[in-house]
Image (tube, rainbow, N blue to C red; front, side):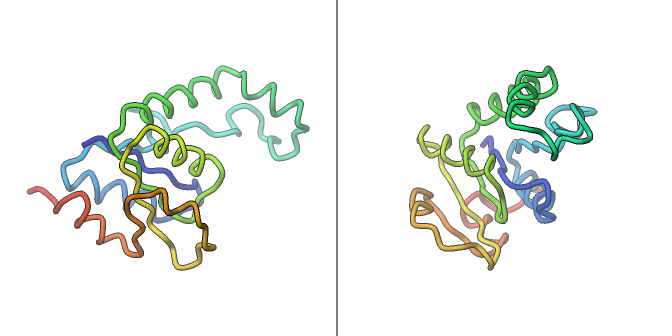
Length: 144
């Protein structure tokens, strides 16, 4: 199965979830390492002062080659996946990716973090879980 893991760059659990799903024999898209030798897209690759951008500067940056390439990598993997795992906490992009997956009829699993604000629309997911080991019940045990 092809699985897209959506989360935040600040989420320290993300790498462990990618590894867990890979150990279960799945092909897992890792936006932090989307292709060999790549550490994924970062706004800093466009401008170190990206946090100070005006709306106009942000819109211009969306059309820059690094942003276009990063978006294309993520969207290609998102379109090709069979399932998406949203690992909380996460931000806007991960939630947009999750909404896309729901709209495409893909299996969606949300892994809560104990601090997630209740959200009614999470009911769109097929599974809402509270512990990483519950992913084994959904995606299978590790393969040897």
